[in-house]
Length: 52
Image 1 (cartoon, one colour):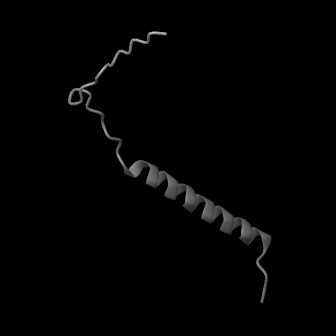
Image 2: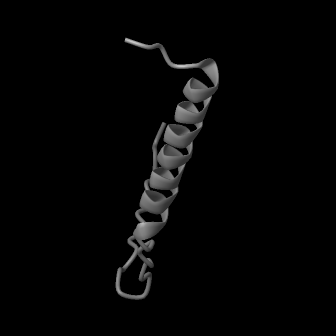
């Protein structure tokens, strides 16, 4: 069985690396961030009086 030349290993590594990076970037940008609605949520400010 013939062995691969070192240049072909480099090409294979670059192809898989570029494919992996494209996969990561596409997965990162597919979901839009959720906007927080502060007007619909009431924020309860609880003040604690410590006696010590």
